[in-house]
Length: 514
Image (cartoon, rainbow, N blue to C red; front, side):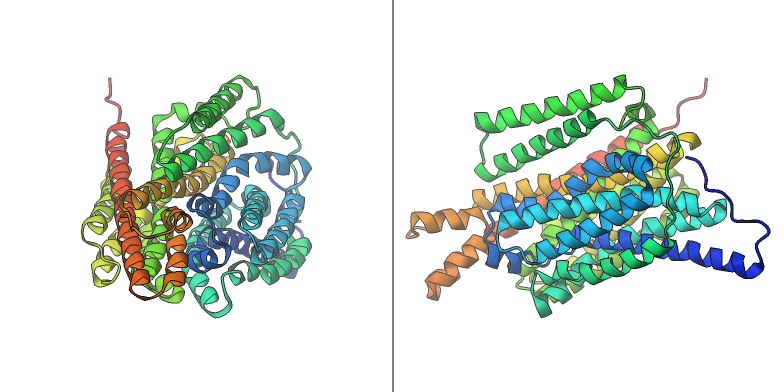
């Protein structure tokens, strides 16, 4: 990627100071944008019970509301990066901000579930436009290698911090102003960013941009959507009919065609040859597995605490702070562990620690007794923080310097894809376990029975209309079923992380010298 022209070497000290100030102002704007994108990844988690009482989404619709944002973002990051190189990165970022603000307002005032899902898709598109070009802008603005390393570190941390504090922000806002306000708070921030960004962010393009292949974009998006849709439908119905099977196979074939096309193109949208390096492919898988489990834990834990433990939105957000604090400590101490024990041992050990914490949570965690949760949450957060840092660093280190841009795009995509797939896969597990363990509950009308088996929110709505001991019995049964679902989620995630740890231990072994 070409560097920008250096600032005039003959400039007076005050001019150089002003130019330096502009660089850090640009970084502040870009980091704030990543903070917003991270917050939007998790801010809705604690607002889901309040939102469900108003919009009455089905179990599958609820999963779409939550993870369509990250899936859209993941599927468009590379595409928007290539397009930004062609039309101008400043233009791409500012258009992304505008779309993000409009979509936030649309989400805040959504009155139906389809409207909210559509708004979340638009939010994902806007976030992809923002995230795809910001790192390229940083490389243009910060020409000094040392300053650029610091800037990229701050920029990277902003997204993780946003995702971590999202539940707390959502809890505070939901408790005082309702669930719609979790989106509305984005609007004034976006307006300020648009004004400041238009003034300070420089325009830049790649003078020799890669070819933007529309067919590759269509194949990747429709293929991923087909597979995820089939997965969610199978979890909702606890069966696989011919429609679900055809959708799953069609999505898988489209993804296969996408991979084949990338291997044939001279300028692929996503260069799969990078995955030939086992360090690169293993690190990418570690990031997807870890971040997917972490975001799913944030989401389902907030639902579990509110629906089974009867926490308020604010209290549920505060309950996640040990997890968030430990995650930050793990992220900062990960490089030290790697230097002390080696990257393979540190990464494998952190994955194992995360898996063990989730196993303890599945076996002994009780929503009504926070003391049983605090220890596992601290350990899980620390392990996840170490894996995220070392996994991302391993992805970048495995790629040659001239391919760092492509590696960075895959790194960002792996985080967002992990978040979307984590909620989709583990959400299907929870929905299936909830339906399997829910008792017969005789005496309910067929439509009431359908609502109860659909989701916990449906059970709460039916119970509100019953009153008395019947309502309490229904809620008790639904709480026990949801509790079983959360236990299954923690157990499945623990098993997946344990397998990933084993894979890392085997695949990251140094090759024997000849």
